[in-house]
Image (cartoon, rainbow, N blue to C red; front, side, top):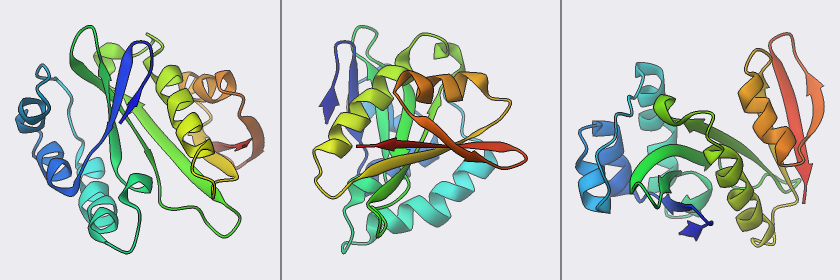
Length: 167
């Protein structure tokens, strides 16, 4: 678990991820937080079931690099966002970060704070040398989060910017 001035970031276990995917507030009940209005798209549900859950279940891997970390506002006692790394560090020591703020909590600085906490965590792991990310070119809020956390643009495709933060 990570903590900032106003947030708690809680890595979800395999069993908790199953509750997350059910999207029926059973996870909120287990975490003893207020119910959320978060919705899981069919695309996200498919990714969670086919990629994240098998990675978390693989006992040969450190699940903290694959699971969702639920971001909880301490004062409101409610989940406001999720952040994750997309697997263990590669041979270059790189990990990719992904994140999303629930719609009603966007533009309140939650994700900048959560990404900063994850950067600090990654620095303390020893084997992580860089964090990378990709953002849609039209998602200004997403790449502002990375800029505010000192990521540098490291290339682009037709639709995305690529980002890097050397630790």
